[in-house]
Amino acid sequence: MSAKRLVIAGRVQGVGYRAWMVRKAGDLGLSGWVRNRPDGTVEALVSGETAAVEEMSRLCRRGPRIAEVSSIDEELCEAPEEVGFFQLG
Image: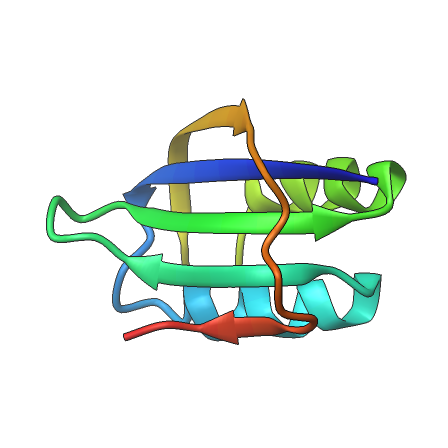
């Protein structure tokens, strides 16, 4: 098991990025959350089997069809207490 905090920059707000991420995380059996930040980035905490967390990180580099990801900052973190993946805000 592993957990990562991702901060995704680029054209990632207003393009369905959070809803896309909720679907992908569900497909991968991940727990955590995703939210928009005031600076225009998207922040997420993803937790689950290491291979699934790494796959989510890889998928986030492309995002949904109309998103344009310029960078992702990643750091290891503590897993969330609740099960499931949620869109905040």
